[in-house]
Image (spheres, rainbow, N blue to C red):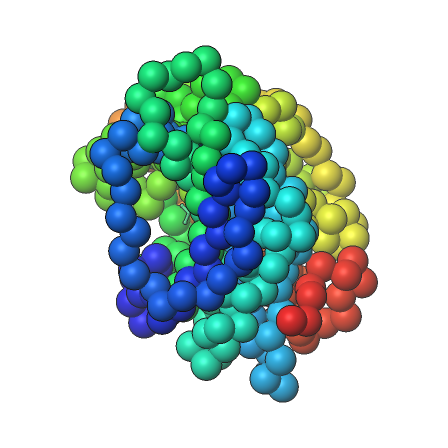
Length: 329
Ligand code: PLP
Ligand code: COI
């Protein structure tokens, strides 16, 4: 299978907002858009997106995971960017149309169809006129995916970056391209200089999240992650894992914690990333100020894998879905 995010299905869905009206969510063959050079998004980054997955269960049926939560988050991101906010029903229709158009292209488990709804500002306006783009384009593309990190399940290495921020304080919760652009330099140099898999952003010594996923610690009976305060993405996987963890008897702590506290915890902890793309990816070590620190015994954490199993067995239709997270389409 191609690297994550580099293969695309044959169809997409497009709906545009012009003259205060959304057009229908139409399926089209995937292909280039043509934009005037003055298009708002090209200048002012009026763009937000979502990432969710559809799974083909063993009986052949296709299921979305918590798509209503992605729809709510896209609408919240759109509002933060002063973009026209698409009605929830339109986004849902666009997602379902996009998946139904490519059912033959959805990989079998443990693969999935990664769905990328995207909203961009399309007004021709370089005036930064103290308001957002009047016009917008909502589109949904899809991509057959396997693991996010190459090499299967393995202990990841994170670089702790306490200098750079991936977003301004209250914009981390917005799933907008600018936050990813802000993290690229740090992630690129972490890869080149330390062979790190990702960066854990800890501005001012406060642990936040990585460039593409939330971060969690399992320590004794405690499941610890940063509290939601606007500075990090409110991950849907994060929320699912906290619920499953509580169900499995862990004490859940959504708290602020520092790099020093984290380093103290690491020798007798497990750590992992959570996200739609990352699912639950174990962390084996961190590098801070040039020094490596092992997480637990440095291997894939057994209890983290039990949590992952609890999550994926619901996503894959192998366990009762008592939270009604999956939707047959
Ligand atoms: N944090 C960032 C920066 C992300 O890009 C993602 C991925 O979507 C997440 C967290 C996890 O969010 P979710 O679990 O909703 O995919
Ligand atoms: C996701 O997990 O959906 C994300 O948006 C991460 C992305 C960088 C692939």
